[in-house]
Length: 290
Image (cartoon, rainbow, N blue to C red; front, top):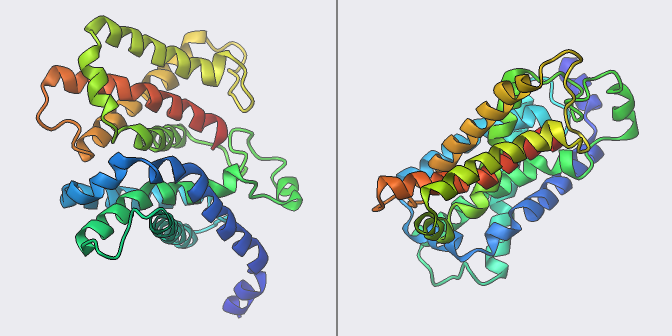
């Protein structure tokens, strides 16, 4: 009887609309990476253990993200895992179709190269597919009415966002934006051009932009501090930890894409600082839009 009720409650039109938004999200968010030569080349030479680790990291990220902004509202982890699996499949499908259509993947290439290119592109594409609901209109008017008493910090699910949830969203935003630029040669080039003073300026600018995005500049979706809360509270509680998360995500992305191989420690640190700038913007923006 329970199974029958579940089938009766299943809205196929909403589900397939969510699938369509997922495909659109994969194309919208991952298209710059589909057309980046460095991402294609990584499919050829990237260490398979690092690629496998990236794919493993992507699985729990998608599951937790699905619980927040999946194709449809989820009430159990089983449903979240289902939506995460669908997002990953959509990422693989979108990556295959786009790379074939652009002539990047050809029939005369080895399976090693083809699988590598599709696998690495499927990571940002799957995140984009999962973000399709929150960014491309995943709620009906009825959903919005039902969520009217929810927390405004979580416009998708109507649930209050915990501190750990806030930090997780920052990590997702930093990872997604870092995936766009971490594979490029410009990251290494900039590390050689910049002096330590430039690095300090970039760190200060990153912190200022992060804090301004969420609290100081009153963007749509930004967070207001409770009355009586000291102005430094949000900076210490959210901005500094958010920047640290962006730095750790940046270091991981650079290591994954072999951008820290065969360069000195100073250049590694400078490259992390440089990549943390877009990472910090992605982390701050995630708190506004996810």
